[in-house]
Length: 123
Length: 349
Image (cartoon, rainbow over all chains, first blue to last red):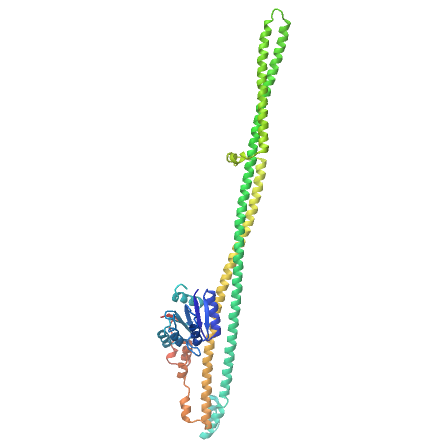
């Protein structure tokens, strides 16, 4: 069973994405910001994929990706940024931090599921 | 604010700078409060659209759940109908076999009875022989009587007649024996037919169904046809129901796809929220700038601070995060931002 961790400060986003992914057969973990997501990783949650927003309180998405890459077993885990942010410099920052890809909101469910299948082997 | 400042010089004589700053302070006095009200309204809109979006997602999830439940019920019903169709087909096949066996059985009985009838015809031949013997015996007896009348000198004739009578008696004996054995055989076979039909099992293949056309086979064929028609009717109903269920499965599948799409569209709320938050920030900056100007006009804030904290349209542009914001900004303020952002929506590194 593939586990996806969703990190977003929008409750609506978390709810809608969780619904889409659960229906597609994925197990979903959610966090409201990067710090909460890091807490979950440190408590042993081992997602097969992370989808994170960029602009969030407490810990932004790019910092989170940078920190998450240092967590045990997360070196090769795909991490996608899902954000309204479209600035190229931000994309470059995310890439440098270790992000696997960049998706600009809104993303159609079938597009999102297609990207997941691309980046997670066997998903 | 700008209308107030522009109108004044047109309708009155020039005033000194103290009066001007007083007018500016008065003109801007309520702008910060207005900005706060606008900011609060924006917060309300964000909160309400957030609640509405959450409700929409919840409702969609419920609709999704109901659609999945319906799909599961439809699948279960389709499974039951499928099994019923298979069982009906098996029962029809069994009934056909049963009717086939019944027809063969009755035809087999017909054949056996026909054999008995033939045996009875054989009996008739034996009876005819006895009759013939009887007639000949009578004639011989008559002849014997005639010869007896001539007795005396023709006594030898009795010896010949006696010999013929003996032969006739012998033939009568054989015929009677034939009748006896035929009757015994018939009795035995009739008993066997009535008591035991086990030979039907091994003889049944010799019965030709295609050529059999009797009242009994017609009746049995009628029953078989009626049963087959009923089976076809039920199978047709089952097939139609299965097709309807397949349509229902497709509809529920389409419904869940639509709800998934609708849930995806709820991302608009997050985008709108961020747009409104940026507007709210901009309004707050206008408020701050206005308060600074008022403070300067009232003499409580130095000129340097006002200049230092003055807002600029370029600062506003720098805070935009969405391509759409930059385009809209450029459309109204000009500059490079007027060019549409063509970075890909999805990019894998």
